[in-house]
Image (tube, rainbow, N blue to C red; front, side, top):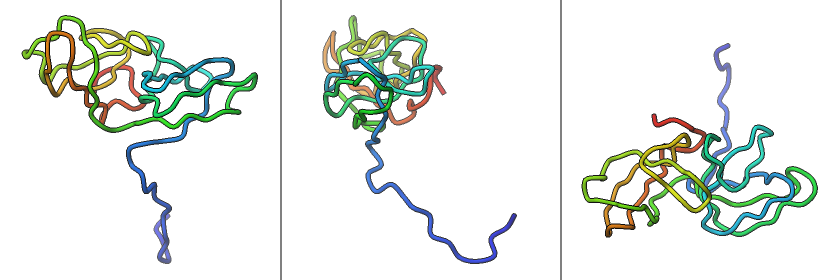
Length: 136
């Protein structure tokens, strides 16, 4: 149905972070890659789950799903370890394999490699990755 009057839409001021509900009984460390469990709550990244971001802070889930929330970056470019990194990796897709690891192949898309630092470190851009498993 078409609008019949003006309206205000609430807007997130901070476009880079979100507060996400944590799955019960997990420990999330600052800087961890996160993923969404089938329950809809987030925890440390498990390959095959949807990417949820990078933990802005450390949090420990309690005995109840969602009782604790963690702030997470959902946009931005981050320095990250990548084994056998090469300058030719620029523009390649990156996939999370654990809460502390990315690879050039996998089942949980976490972003694009946008910078090369050395043979074990790259810059990872996560802007297009939130809520994905496969590359866009």
